[in-house]
Amino acid sequence: MEQFIPYLQIIAGLVLLTAGGEFIVRGAVGLALLMGVSKVIVGLTIVAAGTSAPEFVVSLNAALKDTADIAMGNVVGSNIANILLILGAVAVLKPISASRMTVVRDGGAMLLGTVLFVGLCMFGEINRWAGALMLCVLAAIWVLTYRHDKKMPTEATELHHDEVDEVGDVPTGWMKPIIATVVGIVGLMFGAEWLVEGGVTVARQFGVSEAVIGLTLVAFGTSLPELAASMVAAFRGHADVALGNVFGSNLLNLLVIIGGVSMITPIPVPAQILTSDIWIMLAVTVALLLLAYAFRKISRITGVAFVIAYFVYIFQLVAA
Image 1 (cartoon, one colour):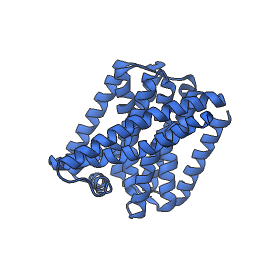
Image 2 (cartoon, one colour):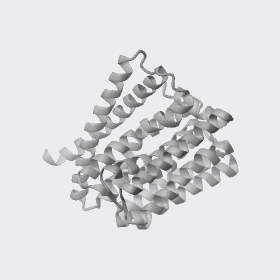
Image 3 (cartoon, one colour):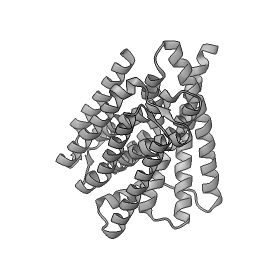
Image 4 (cartoon, one colour):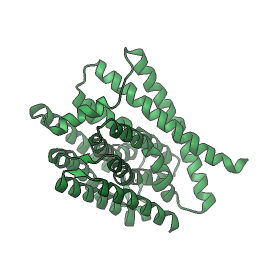
């Protein structure tokens, strides 16, 4: 029976992370709207931060437990999964339209964050000064985006509105959003604890590195809330919301999660991720932006290619 405990921890962790992420998004959005925060800011910051909350808590938990390989693998693997698996699956269901303003501005911000992250990884460790730089760059991006939306609303502005609308019914009053947020935080804390513990144990049982577990199992698990939300949006006819979600989530994964965690404890960059996976992440990011800019959409054929590419990537990781 004991040999099954790590797998039960992983399953329970994934369930709690998914539920906790949903609660924290709804609670935080409800509080923000009650306080009169505009939908543009809510979509730009709170929705994106909420969907990245599972990755943040898992990465922080892993880094504090001296399993930083999982922390780094989780973020890099999640960004790859967000582009290839989530956007690919949504595009197969319904082609995703992409305005050039959204691709240039929000996609460009994601690319800037990715290039900054890759550059900092070249030092072999993301330390506190690097984390502070990443958080400052994110703050500057948010300020510039908000000013642009306020001065000259575009399709990208509407996309942030749609991101908020896709959250669905949010708790009303003051007490319900606070309770939902607290329940979400507790769920994320326990979910992250069990997922990391189970993942480390399974990695040791099968003789694979913790970085691979982070890039595959943990990254896929923490991307589940994003996948579910994007698929629901596609069913409702708002497939383009998935693109905005991924742009925002990938940017936050790199600058807030790695930047924030490294402010608490420095994060070493595993050799495997340094020589391979960050470059794959950069390549799929550039490919996405080029395709979206050139064709103004992500077609079903592109979606199928993305999904196949993701599973080929996972297979080569596990088989190596």
